[in-house]
Image 1 (spheres, one colour):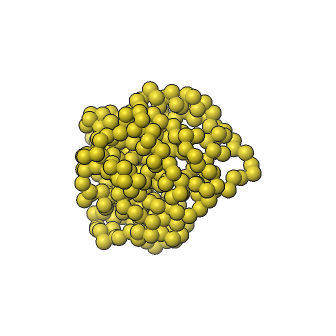
Image 2 (spheres, rainbow, N blue to C red; image 1 turned 180 degrees about the vertical axis):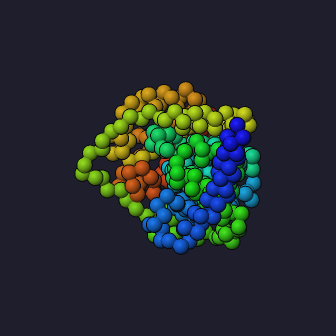
Image 3 (cartoon, rainbow, N blue to C red; image 1 turned 90 degrees about the vertical axis):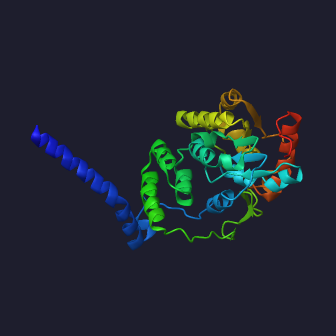
Length: 321
């Protein structure tokens, strides 16, 4: 019995030692070797999507009428300037590949700063099927790491997320990122951070590929659907109205990417107010999109007024403050 206790104690001490030294090992490994030698560590500080700028602004932001949640369809699609012109203040809390697993963290962490009366949450089969890895890395690198972040990482369950969590915590504890300032214009990406969370992408025109799409099921993953339900509950518990919105994608993509669209829409409708804007806006694939699934600024300028009118006609918009 004594030998077993000694063995268990040593195993525990060894585990604690590994947990304490692993982040330092990752940091040293990353510093000494080129990126391609460290394939299992990605830390996208200030990377694609302007998450760092968005959250920096958000922490000092006042209350708004509406908040937008979701993936890059969100932060490129919902332009707060257009909503403001219609008397509705808004903040765009979208981020690159954001799935409900990351939306949950952001809502619980920041929604009480914005205190919106309406949350517009973007839903799309691709988002609700995603493993959440890309968005988890984005959130870890550009926001604080706490127990909610760790819980999100466990739910994602991927080595890239675990490594980023350990490495990111080391960077935060040592203050490595404290003075970082993200560029507000990124010419290589064609992006410009406007403010209120919105990223303007003025360039780019979609060219339809010659090869047809290979359709797949639109059925969401169970983990993402469960996370969506937790987000909806967190918003409803705060008295915030929610509308689920599918942002338009190209007609080429919308018509051929997924089977069982009726089943997907039934799942969304069962969760409350749901609006699919595909086919409801006069958008041209080549003029208003820069790739198969993302509006350029010309497309956002057309889409937003139609969405506002649609929600207004259904009585789903809050009156201005």
